Length: 468
Image (cartoon, rainbow, N blue to C red; front, side, top):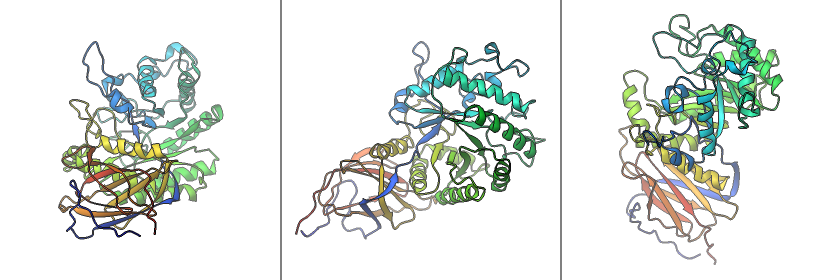
């Protein structure tokens, strides 16, 4: 072998630094497919050429978002405001006949869903209601007639998939029943936000709706319940479905945290609950998540970090960590213009630092095959993808939940079987947003440093092997 001599990189390698984190990549060790960790809640903000021209359609489109979940869509005027998506808006008068096309108001939702599909994303439709933070609640109470509610949903599905009532043919596969029914278990009578009924009422409601929709649409994926947090509640829910032999095509759940391990541990617990109750083939979807340090006096701080470098690195770290956990899809909350929208600036709708976590993940998806990457540092996450012609992409993320961690961290990547090769590196940190930086690979080794909150996407052409 030719002797390998450490090289000095303008951006990021200082040869006198001590050896830091070690990452070993084996391009020949296939792990599986890169998973859809980059799905989101909600669609693009489409600029109106005749009025204000603020929008993010193109920036959204180039991310190649796999799925967009339609929850809380009613809180953005650009989607249709309160007159879209929610069942209470699609079918405003519950006393009308669900078979009557004139009883429905699809106009705004049609336009909104078409804007999602135009980006290349698929719709993940939440059947139910947006969260209600108002003093008075309106639409989150148990429907007067569970079966009638299910029949209304049937016609919504037929409108969007079969063209019923001058409808569309969008081929929407996933239909989720309700959202966070367990959020207000302790005070559902006094201050509900998402389900203004008892747990027993929800179980009954879900059974009726799921049974009817499963029978009516055996080829669609009917699931839920978008669990907020209560795992005991979820266990009882799954036991009920199992006992009554009601199918569950996917199980959805939520978590907001600042610790990546909270995500990975919960993913394992949810998978264990599903398996325990006989739902071994049911996919697990984390379909709401974001960075939160605290919901009360740390809430404003949390919101400020969501689109800053800490939120960006956190997002990339969660995607990388969950790629290796028993969770089948992540759906970030939220791409709707709102306080929780980490990907776009709220004033201009231009991409933020967090946007580039999604941009980087799509680069892995494009190569498709995950290969083995092992990091020896718990704050350094590595995900590697290989293309069919041997190119490699590596997403290396450093995230620390502790703001007192300020030291730069050297890293060394060793790629098994590689020699010298061309590397393109795109760094996102406190100063840069997906900025190309100089980097080399010698003897299959790449070295550099990362800030406490930063991520770099390395694009590596097939390297020449060294010969004796």
